[in-house]
Each structure stands twice: as structure tokens, then as C-alpha cells.
Length: 417
Image 1 (cartoon, rainbow, N blue to C red):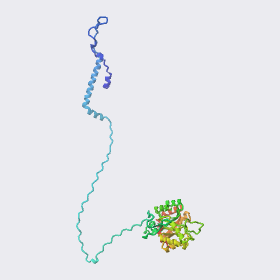
Image 2: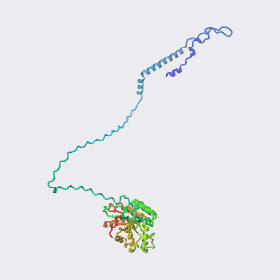
Image 3: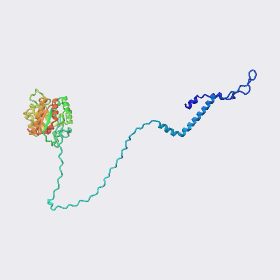
Image 4: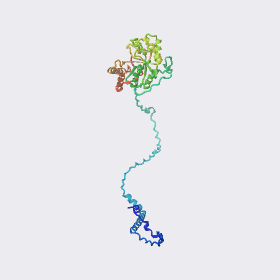
């Protein structure tokens, strides 16, 4: 029991401790009737229980004082003993070593100058002195890949444009630069593999078909746009930004005219040369950045030498290329271009006259055979979904078979007549 509880249980009767001093007098007290009362008997001695409680309280005080003194003298040892009795657990903690300070760079010792080489004695006969060895030739650099990413020259180029009522027309620059060369897709001249060019004509007739072709075709494919297409300048810019070489697919008179209409401002055999030249300028002024023209509809017009010659002369004057699509097997366009010195190419195969997958694959294989035999070949088609699908599949193994896919400008004047 602690001291506070013990003190709480002590009940001291203070009245019992007081002596008989509280009496009014040690004598007799007067009474109300005038008499004197008998003296009160004095109280007896303190009771035994009271004395015991007082003694216990005093003993408790002495004990508390002793404990306080003992703690004052032995407090440190008591705390250590108390802490020793508490269970403890220690967990090892690994401290990462501090990073070592970087070593200062070693200072290279100053080179010790070597003694100058001893002079060599001159040869006995200077005429027979050994000539200096020629420097080792550098290994030849590999030619750039024909199907790699390229950036075409932005159009129009100053000096290559002539303003007219029909719009900006191509022209040869004063320094001799020609549009068909400046706007061409670059191709490595050192690439000696057989070259195959694929031209998809009649682009721009359908916006959906044209957009699908631009999205899915690789930039090595040449695209020919009809001049009457809506937003033609936007289509041509998008194609050239992606890396496609561009031509114009100029409408010309077919054998079935007028039942089959080739389009606005078509070149017709019944018109005078100046009228056809005006229509040609209308087509040429619709866009900028193309290398030349072709036509998939001119089966009648391209077979007429009198009608074709003024057109070929105009192409020469403006520095443009001509691709004979051979819509007519008796076309004279390619031969006239050769005579006039106009850069030209011929379509060897129409790859999608039959739209079945097997037929398109067969025409592409025939292009490989022509290119292997003659060194180059041109295939022409339209942007049909099946044509685009088979072209992409065919291109995946073309390089492994030893052929190079090229823009049509890279085949200018390479094909035999």
C-alpha cells in the first residue's frame, strides 16, 4: 500500500487530542438558579488506537524519507537496473558506403624529345631513286538507297515559272535549269540495277481513291494527276511533300470520242494547233512541281503526227518530259519526242487492265522480265485498291530479286525505241 492510501485511512480525532483547556474554568460553573455546579471530571488519557495511528503515521514519514534519500544516492544504478529488465530487440542496418571521391585525371608526363633521326645517305644514282608510294585508295562508298527517304525541291522554284492568264506555266531558267530535272525525285546514278518505274495515272478523279493512294503507296511510285481535279494544287503538294514524283495526266482524244469524253479542255485532232496549245497551257497552269505529262485517254490523238508535233515542241520549249502511255499501239508521241530531243519514256505494260489479283501479279512479273532484258521498264496503272495492294506486296521482295524501284524521270531516254 502506498503512502497516499495509508494517509487517507488515518482518521485522527482532534477533539480527543485536546486537553481539558476548553473548559471555561477549572472550578465550578454557576448554575441558573444561583448555585454552583459540581466541577466536571477531567478527561481520561488518550486511547490506545489513537496512539497506534499516530505511531504508524510517524513511521511512514520516516520510511518515505529514507526511501527518498536512498534514491538520491542510488538513482543511476536503479535506472540502469530497470532498463536492463526491459526486453530489447536490435536489427542490423546496412549503411551504403559513401561514394568515393573522383580521382583527379592523371597528368601525362611531358614527352621526352627524341633525338633527330640520323640523315640518310643519298642514293648513289638519283635517276633510279625509288618513287614515293601512292596513298592508299579509300574504299568505295555504297550508293544511296533508291527507296530511302528523300526531300523534293519545293515548288515553285524562282526562275522556273512564267506567269500567264492560265496560271503559272513551267519554263526553262536563264541558267539552263529545266523543270523536269529540278522537280524530279532524286535517284542514285551509281545504282546499276535494272530499274522499274510504276506510274499511277488519273489521280484526282476521286478524292477517296486519291487519298487512299497517298496514304498507302510508298513514295517511290510516280503519280500523274488529271488537271481538272478539284483541289489539284493541294493534292500535288501533299504528294510531293511525301516524296512522290508528279506528272500531269493531260486529257486527249480517244478513239471512241465523242461517246467517251476525256474531260475538260481535252486535246482534239479536229482543233487547230493554236487551240490545242491553248488547252495545253490551261492544263499546265493548274499546278506546279510536275516533271512532265502523259495521257491514258489519247488513243486517237497520240496516233496523229500532225496533232502531236506542236505539243511535243511545246514540251521541249518548257523543259518538260513526255511519258507515252501507249494507249494506241501506233502512237507516234514517243518517236516525235526522241526526234525533238524531249526526255521521254514508254509504258511497257498496263498492270491493271484486268483487275484480278493474279492478272496484276502477272503483269508485274513481266515488268521484271523486260527490265532484266533491257535494263529498265515502265508500268502504268490506276489507283484502284487492288492495284495498290498488289504493288505493295510486289515491292516487298523487289530489291532481293535484284531490281531497283525508280521514279519515271530516272528512266528518261533509257528505253529502246
